[in-house]
Amino acid sequence: MSDQKTPTPPTPAVDENQLIAERREKLKLLRTAQVEGKGVAFPNDFKPGHRAAALVEAHGATEAEALEAQAVAVSVAGRMMLKRVMGKASFATLQDATSRIQLYVTRDAVGEEAYAEFKRWDLGDIVGAEGTLMKTKTGELSIKVTQLRLLTKSLRPLPDKFHGMADQEQKYRQRYTST
Image (cartoon, rainbow, N blue to C red):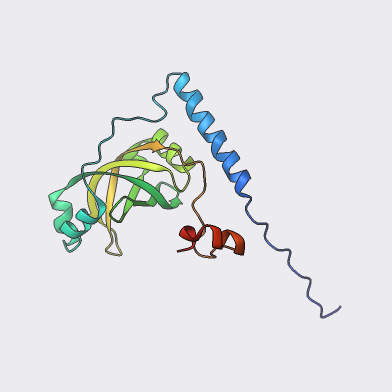
């Protein structure tokens, strides 16, 4: 036996063109579903009634029990920035023009079909959500979603802000993306 360690193969970089191709395929499926009469692919009738920053400002300090007793109905729309799918319940972070707010999506509240669709959505998609305000166990203000709709499909993936840009030339040419 030798003491040499075998190098682990590097993880393959995610090809942006492949991601775009996968998202275009999902868009194609949405459009074929519309042709088959399963609803409008991109509805234009959703009107958000609230902004995330205003909700956090107005109800951020409210206790969980008081917030649940009030049953504040809200509707928000924004870009899905994070998504954590866990069995029958999921969390998503929605960012609108003002701030971010967390969505709590359960299969029982939105229905089997809507929850299955939600699990197929990508980060960056524009989503509309209606529900009631609640506080999670960690104390974060969230929306317990009762209705969830995909408003616009994002074809390009969100930029990777953690690692930054690797291409120096792109960094200089597109300074606005590296800030």
